[in-house]
Image (cartoon, rainbow, N blue to C red; front, top):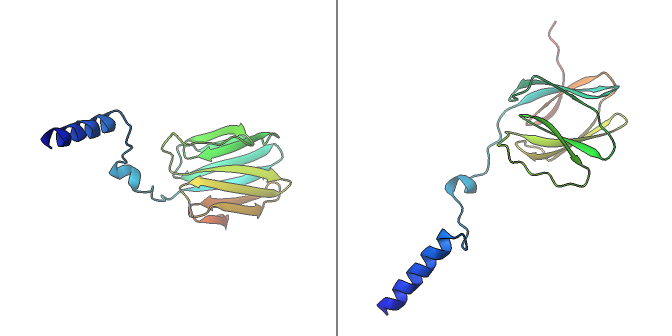
Length: 143
């Protein structure tokens, strides 16, 4: 009986050591908390312009929305993926979302770091709105 317990213990240790039995650390079990961020989005003739007010490592971003390519914006910047490509965050960004535009209709799909999953709003050319972890708000300019 002792040999059986010993062999089972060794088998268990070997399985854990070589990854046969997946274990999650406490950090992996706790979902990322939503942290605050704020950016201003503008629908320009040449594409999308963004200004990071807080929660971003960037100050300004600008990109075109070429057909077949979908920009993914996060707290570190922007990358573009193919329209049907699955994007996987490997950067520890506090938020990330993809953005698409059809005429003046802007669609955002959050991957993480927001209280929203999908946002859709009309943004006329050269107009600006604020995006944060809660959604979209009008831009209140201080004069």
